[in-house]
Image (cartoon, rainbow, N blue to C red; front, side):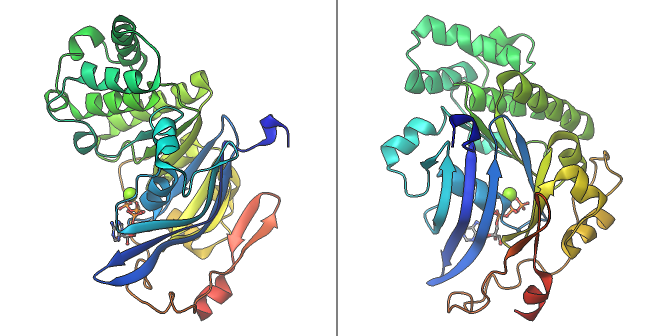
Length: 314
Ligand SMILES: Nc1ncnc2c1ncn2[C@@H]1O[C@H](COP(=O)(O)OP(=O)(O)OP(=O)(O)O)[C@@H](O)[C@H]1O
Ligand SMILES: [Mg+2]
């Protein structure tokens, strides 16, 4: 493969095992997808379907009781099981992560300028003065007017939309190749949601990032991402080109999501829960080897759908 053909991110058979109360269960399993350089993929699905765990496994940010397995290669380099030093060098520099809740992801007391500069100090050779200039430039880039005065603010002093912009500035501060945005707009009202989506889309184009966008919202998916992967109960049940899947979903769950979802473009509602979520999550039979994950089949070029009969039988 030539360098241009190597995916920015290639995820194969990714699984996350959770242990709770002395029992282990698969919270995510058999996740496969690939993201070409400078392309955008959405991961969509109802609450609890495993979107965040997939993203956190890729970014190496899983909680202690969660164990990843399988493969996630970033420009060919394996992330799962990567040495902590190498991981730290990549995270926050070449891989940026936008958390859903800026208030819990950012330090409550440290001024925003200091937090932005700290990432730059850790990952770039910029001088103190250059770091300050770059911090102002970044706040400008994410559309925060009066960037200079915001440097001395704490996160709690800003509005929800401004916090999310600071979060994005932080994530892109070292010019990452890959930006993972975990529900970057869920906590915001409709107008702000639209602005943040526009911002991410603009940055993706301008900086040539690869974007993995996690959302509940099919409106956001069709507006931002050319490709989509639909998660249900810890698995991807369908993936392919967004336009094609929106037009003719191949999996019953995707169809139900589309039916239940508000008009495309209306970002006001969350996706409702379609069926009992992750029925096997509290069940140990999966660990005993039953209920093997069924295969995704390519029903038309680039359009993959999980076998539904096997699933029903499992
Ligand atoms: N630290 C943890 N320990 C045990 N189980 C967990 C842990 N974190 C998440 N889970 C479980 O794993 C499943 C997937 O969670 P995840 O957070 O990935 O869902 P999600 O698709 O991101 O949902 P949401 O849309 O609500 O953010 C859920 O059933 C959740 O309860
Ligand atoms: Mg989540």
